[in-house]
Structures are given as structure tokens and as C-alpha cells.
Amino acid sequence: MGSLAGFALTKQRAASVDPAQPASAAVPQEFLERLPDPVIVLNVAREIVAVNRAARETLGIGLLGRDLALSLRHPDVLAAVETVASGLPSVTEEITLPMPIPRTFTLHAGTLHRDGVPTATDPQLPCVVLVLRDETRARRAEQSRADFVANASHELRSPLSALIGFIETLRGPASDDAIARDRFLGVMHAEAQRMARLVEDLMSLTRVEINEHVPPRHRVDLADVLIGVTETLVVRAEKRQMTIALDCPDDLPPVIGETDQLTQVFHNLIDNAVKYARAGTQIRITARPVERLPSTQAAGVKISVTDAGEGIPAIHLPRLTERFYRADEGRSRRLGGTGLGLAIVKHIVNRHRGRLSIDSIVGEGSTFNVFLPALPRPIASPNGDDDDGDSRPDPLGVTKL
Ligand SMILES: Nc1ncnc2c1ncn2[C@@H]1O[C@H](COP(=O)(O)OP(=O)(O)O)[C@@H](O)[C@H]1O
Ligand SMILES: [Mg+2]
Picture 1 (spheres, rainbow, N blue to C red):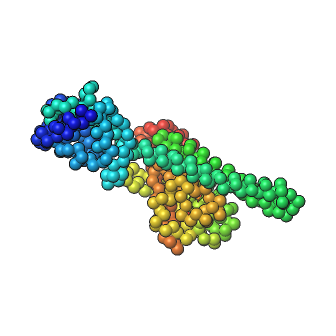
Picture 2 (cartoon, rainbow, N blue to C red; picture 1 turned 90 degrees about the vertical axis):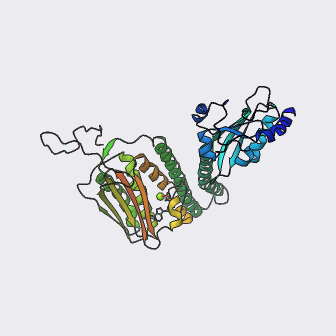
Picture 3 (cartoon, helix red, strand yellow; picture 1 turned 180 degrees about the vertical axis):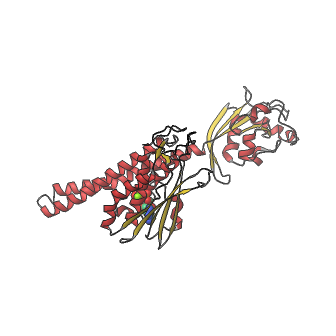
């Protein structure tokens, strides 16, 4: 443990490093500054002789000449330095620093001397280098993938167990009971349909996520989309004595989008209104041009789906578009919901560079607003023709679907 002894021995003498001094001459500061990960260089006494910008900004470490233990109070970091000091060339481990919000880093600690940490007395002599790589985002992504798989499996397991249970009953105790058989087959059909819906929604979500970074390029007339969706849902609404009122001006500007995906957005929103609003009420769909979309300067279109339902308590609103999140778990399951509808909506709207906002008042109802960028107006032709938008190629190469 000769090198450790050297550590202790030189500690007092090295404490005289001037914090105002620039980084140790032996460490090219310019080089360190350009490294994206936090780097801390220590002398033999475990004092900081150089840090880069990433370390200053991420870890708030600024004072040169300070003992590492005073700047980065983490037992694993100090232990890693000790290990390196005791002769091991390098150590790599994962640490979580409390920060304001805990962050996970991979810590690499290594000596800068082939023969281990020297017992030199020069306080500027760099001996140990610490490099921290922020893994917080990667860990979160891993966690969310793991949660997703667990949730999806859990959602599939309950209809599957129900199906297996009923099949066993039909083969055994209920094999001669025609009435029970009919009833069970009805339930089995519903459970199988639930699984099919779940798989369908999972596949939609994956498809949307895969190309979320590729903005759509087609011209879409929302009136056509809204009329189509309303027509497919009106029968379901009638079963609950509900009406759907569509208010869409003839001169609504076209948007840039993908018809199938926008159809899915409004299908999911209106389907929710049909499911969750009170029977006998009206669902209102309004579409209006807006001069400026929220958070951008661009012109766009706002489509609102308003229902007269029980409303959604404010506490749920920020999480409503998370996968499998349900404000009213029992109700969603009873009505055959997958908990994925709004997650799909959010990803499609993101892909369209739009915005989704939800207003809800408990006891009165909810409004889901979708903002979409309008198709930029083509440059007017010199002969003064009105643009019908359909037949002529426009500068964006946008085509009517
Ligand atoms: N119009 C609405 N009124 C009340 N609650 C709603 C409405 N739309 C969605 N919700 C709530 O948001 C949750 C998530 O919706 P969604 O992602 O479409 O899943 P699902 O409808 O399959 O349950 C629903 O379970 C429901 O609790
Ligand atoms: Mg839904």
C-alpha cells in the first residue's frame, strides 16, 4: 500500500494549491473543455487540479485546490479514487448523485501514471482522472421499456386467463349445459376482442413512434376526416342516445398531415367522448382556423371535441396521455378500453408538429383540443388565378391525398 501512504503523506503540503490558479500546466485545459462529459483531475492529495466545463455545469465543481471529498460527497466516488490510488489502474462503476433530481452516472476513475499514483510532492501534478458519463436518460428509457413490456403483458394476461378458464369450464363441468355454453362463449368472444384491440393499439403505437421524427407531407382537408369519423361513430353514439354535432366552416384551411393518422386521432377522441360522456348528451366537434399555434408563429387549425361527461379530475390530466394510464380504471376496462388511445393521439399530434391540450371540469365535461399546422399558402400565380390547391404542385411538394 505504498501509494496510499504517499497519498496521506503529501496531503498537507499539497493543500497550499492556489484556487485562483488556472488548471495544472500538465493538463491541457483547452482539451478538457472540449470533452462533453464531466472530467475532474486530482493531484496526489486528492485535491482538484483541473475540471472542465461539463464538470462545472453538471456537478457544480469549480474550486481548484479543494479536496474532492468537499466537492463531490459520494462514498463510491471516494472509494473509487482510493482503489486507483492503491494501485489498480482504473475502476468503472455506476453511481447515483442526489443533485436536485437524482442522476445516474458511469464513473471511470484512472491513474495518469503507469506505475500507480506516485508519491511526488508537486501539488500541480495530475495523478487521478475521473470521468463521469450521464446515463440518466438511457436508464430512464430502459426503465420505461421494461415498464411498458410489464404493463402490456399484464394487460394481455387477464383476458388470456379468462379465456383459458372458460375453455376449461366448457370442457369440464359445463360441457352439457347449453345455456352456460352460450353465455361463456359470449364472454370469451368479448375477451378475445379485447386482446385483438390491445394488439391493434400496440401495433399502432409502435408504428407511430417509429416514424415520429419524420414529419408528414400531405395535404389533408380536415372536414373530410371529421365527417368520416363522425359517420363511423354515430351508430355507437345513438345506442347511448347521444348526438354528434360537427361545426366545421367550408373555408377551413387544409393542414399538412397524414389522413389515416389524423382519422385515428379524431376517432380516438370522439370514441372516448361516446364512451365516457353521459348518455343522452351531445358531443360537439368544432374546427377553427387560428392565426398562431401555441408556442409557434405558424398559422394552424384548432379542432375541439367537447363532451358533457363527468369530467376528469385535474390530478389526472398531466398523465392522461401516458400509455395504459386511466383516470377511471374500472370504467375504462368495463367499456373495453385499452388505455392506449390518448397515447396514440399524443404521438400522432407530435409527429404532425401539433399540440394537444385538455380542459376538463368535474361534473360538466371535457374538451380535447388538437392544434395542427396549416398548409402554407402557395405563392399566388402571376395571372391572378385563384388557387384551388388540389391540382397544382406547391412549393412544399404537398399533395392532396
Ligand atoms: N372524454 C373523456 N371523459 C372522461 N374521461 C376520459 C375522456 N377521455 C379519456 N378519458 C380518461 O382517460 C383515460 C385514457 O384514455 P384512453 O387513452 O383513450 O384509454 P381508454 O379509453 O382505452 O381507457 C380513460 O381511461 C379515461 O379514464
Ligand atoms: Mg380511448
